[in-house]
Length: 351
Image 1: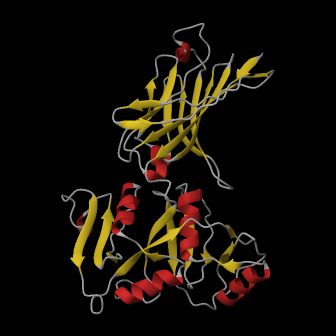
Image 2 (image 1 turned 180 degrees about the vertical axis):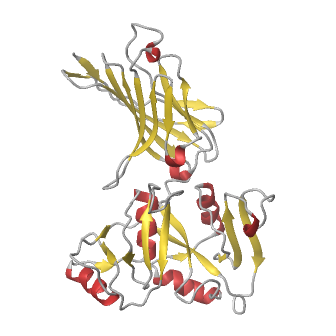
């Protein structure tokens, strides 16, 4: 069947959020491919947004009610990461996935409108989404780029404490700890954006203005009380020499490659460090792992050495035996460096 390949970008403004798209339209005759339409949508964090998608079959006003109709929404991965399932609809059966569960729905499932509504948009939601509408006659594909204001400042905020354990850093030690991870002490604005993006951490940490704060998205007893509501909790200004806490670091997006180094056997820390060097790389830092996990969706269930002597692994897709309930960078701890129980994560700077 002959279909029309059309690439278009539209400009809209809805509900106080800016939908601004520059547009070029170039119809191409394609003998086999589906109709492809590209749209860009810009929205503010915390808003609700609808990503447009419609079937091109105009023979019926109720296309999506056909038996066997299938609508699939996917968040397109960047780099080597895998695409992230968002929503799948087949007739009366609908399923949402992962962090999108209970936050997404079809705008009008009883018509030819397969548009996707996302509630409480965060910076983490930014990226390219693909809508596929398959009804056995015509397959339609729409790609929508969701741009979230503030998402263009690429970087990641992560909590950090050294091998000494929780609450062992005065402010100056905190600065050195972030520097050792190729990062800096985060600002309040950076922590606030990370909280809006889903960061939840119950340990208090230094920020660069000398305050000590921590972000809570899931209020609970040990973390300021279950009745306090979500937010960034503050201990206020603290004595930079005498008081000791953890620290929140900020690392910019890196330009190189973070990866798991395939090895025939497990390694001691010294062997792990050497293995990365032999691969023309360096042993990765905690900031490398967090940036790859948060910005690129890096996902691996293998525990590996990092430069600070910790053993961690990044999970973007929660699953049994890895991180069953949430996406997270998991820490095993700071084991004896002579243990041969772990692999290694390396980082190779772009030449």
